Each structure stands twice: as C-alpha cells, then as structure tokens.
Length: 394
Ligand SMILES: NC(=O)c1ccc[n+]([C@@H]2O[C@H](COP(=O)([O-])OP(=O)(O)OC[C@H]3O[C@@H](n4cnc5c(N)ncnc54)[C@H](OP(=O)(O)O)[C@@H]3O)[C@@H](O)[C@H]2O)c1
Image 1 (cartoon, rainbow, N blue to C red):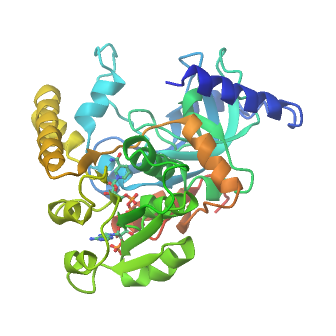
Image 2: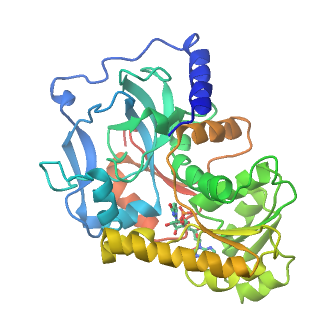
C-alpha cells in the first residue's frame, strides 16, 4: 500500500505532467471483436516449453477495482520466475492469493499468461485513478498472482505502475521493473541500504551478471558502495563497465578461498543460493550490523510440497532458526522477495533518467518468438535481460 506521503508525492508528479502531455489516446480497441479478445501467449497446463500456446482469443482484461489501469503492452521481458511458473512453481500459494475464499466459479488458473514486466501506454483508467491518464507512457512489474504481460493488454493496480523513464525506449524500459524492484527490495527494504548510508560500504554480489545482479551493481555504485561482483570470466568486462570495483570469476578455482583473501564485507546480496549460504556469511564483518540477503528461498516450494499451512510453518521455522543462529555469530541473515511498487519504480526511473542506471539487455525477441525466448532463458548464462518486443512487426 502507498503511504499518504508517497501517494501525495505521486499525485504532484502526475499533476506536473498533465499540462504538456499529448491528448489522451482513445480508440485503441479497434473492433467490436477486439473488445472481448486479444492476442496472448498462454499456458493451459504446467510443463515444459511445449505448453506455451499463442491465441488471438484471450479474454480482454477488465477493470475490477477503481484503482486499476489497463496498459497496452509495447514490450515485456522474461525472468527466471516465468520459467518456474511455466512448470507449476508456486501454484499453491499463487492460487490462494488469486482466490483466497474460493469464490470463483472457474476453479482453475488457466489459461494463464506469464511475463511480469511491461512497458507500454495507459489505455483506460479506473474511476479513482487520477495520477495516470490514457496515453501516458508507463512501466510496471505485475505480481505473479495476476495475469501477465505476454499479451496485447494487461491490467494493473495504479499503485504498481509508474511513468516510464523518458530516456528509454519501451524495449529498454521493459528490461528493468521486475529485477529493479527485486534488487530494491533486497538492498533497500530488507538490507536497509540507501543513498545516505551506503557510501564506502563493502558490498559483495554473488551472481552479478544476470538481471538482478546487473541492476544491483549499478544501484549500489550509484549510492557510493565499494562493489565486488562474482560472475563468470566472460562477464567481467560488463561488470567493470557497470562500475564494479572488483570482479571475481567463480569458475577460476575455489571461490570461497578467493573471497577469504579480501577484506570483510558490510553487505552480501546472494542471487545464487544453495551452497553459498554455507560459507558466505563468514565473509561479513562481525557485530557491526553487516547483513546477508538471499533471493533464493524455499518459501513457495514449501507450500507446493506441504500445502499452505504446513509450508508456511516450515518456512517460519527455517528462516527463524537461521536468523537466530547467525545473530549469535554477530551477523544478520535475511530473505528478500520481489515487491510490486509504483513509488519505488518512480525512484528507479529518476536514477535511470539521471544516467546512473542503464538497462542491460541480453537479447530481444519478437512477440512471435516467445517460445524461443523461454528456451534462451532456460539455457542460463544470462547477461542482463531477455526482452520481448510485443508490438514490433516481425
Ligand atoms: N525471491 C524473489 O522474489 C526473487 C526475485 C527475482 C529473482 N530471484 C532469484 O534470484 C536469482 C537471480 O535472478 P536473475 O533474474 O538475476 O537470474 P538470471 O538473469 O538468470 O541470472 C543468473 C546469473 O547468475 C550467474 N551464475 C550462475 N551460477 C553462478 C554462480 N555459482 N556464481 C555466480 N554467478 C552465477 C549466471 O551466469 P553464468 O551461469 O554464465 O555464470 C547468470 O548471469 C534467481 O535464482 C531467481 O530465481 C528471486
């Protein structure tokens, strides 16, 4: 939820834009048929890439709440969560969130549209939306319990949406919201770092060459941190270009031993998970508020395996015991998650427009190539983001 302060700040910015904007764009829904159906990539069951299906008859999104907007999608991008959701990851928790009281007559999440990022144009606004108007160029990351952005149109809550950075094309902008908000949540909301307390802090980023990592390196450098990036050798030039102070190749020998030769860290962002947890916390300064934040958690898997109640209980026990264990050793252990937030995207847009953060795009695919884009992501070794140009003609 937006705080009152944040809400009024956003209202001011919206009011400032209203004067010089081109007239609202109406009539994007060209034919009576288009009012009820739209082109979309959907899945009708969970599985491998062959479950992806293109349809021209996906139900057109409708505004159910007065704070919602419908966005015409110009570009989208893929994240590891799209691969996982394609295979059914998180279905238990996400279905509970979609229909907590089980009121829906259709007892299924299908057809389900994947894709979390959107850059596009506002087409229609709910009655209480005053911050945006039709024709505004916006970007957003749509939470995973809602229909996704691999579609001609998507509906989002106004609180999830922000004005697109002026200096970026839609294709560039679509690469940033989900990874940007995830990094923002991990570094700022969970890690407690910000522009005024980050200067000179020693930060280690494990898995720095992917979507989240390339964003986090730039964010922490913009805030004055001393950043050590861990990635494969072939990503080291990119890391240096993004501003990393030290780059460590995790394939060139024992990573733990290499990192132990460096001065201790104030903050670690772990985008890799697994065995890293066993040794990474020993690299933190003790009894100084130093924090390890991981993005790789069993939160949704626990609920898939054990059901909602037992899964949440298991999650609570796991995170609680690890937090206490590390607290006794003088360091903080935390989990972080993607958090949808228009106000945080506003702050990210300012960093982008001031040249402090640039999109890092691995490859752009056309809308007809969505299955190919999923295969690319599945192949791993991301160097930034895989983007889908939804309105391009190819
Ligand atoms: N908790 C949440 O809400 C949340 C949100 C977003 C993402 N995540 C998770 O965070 C992780 C990162 O996301 P992402 O979008 O940045 O993924 P991504 O774009 O696929 O990037 C992963 C990067 O890590 C590198 N890598 C793989 N193994 C590594 C290792 N052992 N050491 C260092 N680098 C390694 C990969 O390149 P090479 O293999 O070539 O080295 C790749 O560049 C994923 O596991 C994702 O599921 C969680």
